[in-house]
Length: 321
Image (cartoon, rainbow, N blue to C red; front, side):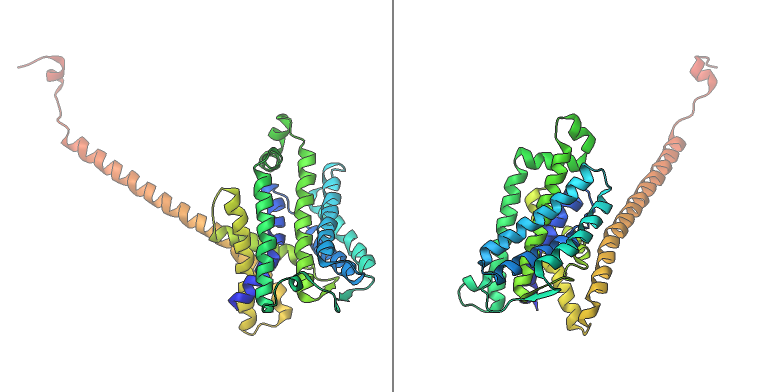
């Protein structure tokens, strides 16, 4: 159970990192996720069926997701459509695009070699874990190096304060478009990997992926905290693995696969509420400590005022009898 969750979590990790870029770095709720995820899968599987290698097909799946994110970024920044609506528009449009790419709602792989077939003849689970480690490692390393450059710093500055970044000469519209592009490229990459792992691409495989991504982001931030970008990216991988583990446990307890979507929503609600309740308890505890210290201070002041010697008016004025 743990081993299978580890392998699947690593394949979902690029999606979680992509959601992290828009949701945490840019502070944008991007619903393009549910369109770009199956877009990457559709592009990859269709190219593989038409004779392309798994490497080229996977790369083109990533590029396809980047194009979807680019469209959302243009709608948001250049046409000034609200980010939430821009994501919905692109997601809706990509449904038809995916149907044209695949030609039908479900396209299976037959004898085509997937990425894991290029690895040594290990067990399927081991191959999945190794492939996930390689892909996730490359993604984290590339993003870590990027966030150390002026481009990455400008992207984070735009997410922190768009107006101040623009005042300092940063092309904020360009940074937002770039963030959308990279984010959805990684999401489509995850869709490509999942499609190869499952052996098919389906038009409905993107439903609920935004919930999966958000839940994994929040789970990762609960279990692994830090301000360093490398720690934050690693937390996304941890979140993806833990989230898949929770779903695996739920299925092991007898929940049918049709209930996985509602379980995903429940997990998201829980991980949203836990930090809120924790902060409330922490604030209440700090307030209680403050009030107790304030009460003790007042009591000490009263004791000191009782012990303080009292002088008569004659003594203070210098009159003595």
